[in-house]
Length: 86
Image (cartoon, rainbow, N blue to C red; front, side):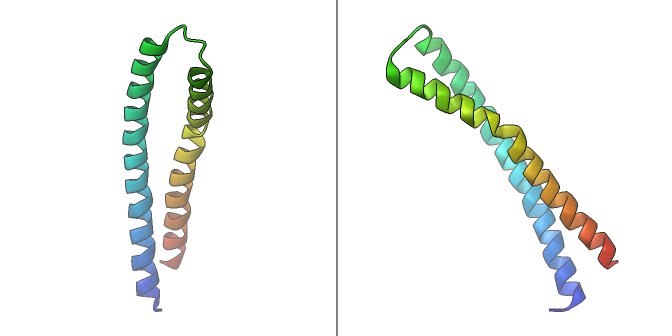
């Protein structure tokens, strides 16, 4: 693989990471809207399934920022490497 091919692959990886972040952000927005609606409907319920669902949603919510950082760091590291190649 030539240096030019490596650079092209890095550019593609950077764009894929950025696109992945945009898709992820859109999914988060939709999930947050659905969660708000579900919270209104299920407000006050003590059913075990509802409790389990709330716990699962809280666990998923806790992963949003770390996942965003992973996308961003991937693009940043690939960009740094690309810069070093010249």
